[in-house]
Amino acid sequence: MNMPLILLYNLDTPKGAKIRRMCLPLGLRTRLVTPEEYGLPLGDLVDGAAPETPWTGETFGDEMLVLVNCTGLLLDRFLQGFRRNKIPAVYLKAVLTPTNRTWNSVALHGELVKERQAIAQGQGAHAGQTSGEEGN
Image (cartoon, rainbow, N blue to C red; front, side, top):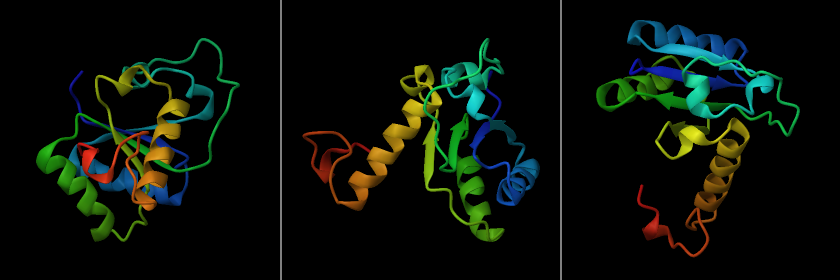
């Protein structure tokens, strides 16, 4: 399925409602991900799967976005929409990739937190990297 989609975490809030309204004219579907779904691989969430049993492991309270099939102009418009609509930033953001589509939400959250901390400290996100080796 190649339809653009935004997975929203911990955004069942007025801020999340603003984000969802902003997505409508862009043709972006949105999906609120609940903690009970955190154990599913991201690819399964994108495909609309529901867990057979609710996730009972670790959860997180940070807001997080996963952008699916959002490239080029659409991605730019989405990100610009935050400024235009005066929506505070969501600091943990990822694009769905062939690598991370097999990760669950908790694993992705952990990687994004490590990456954000490394950037704040001026270091590479992974052990042994320098800031010039990130490949981003």
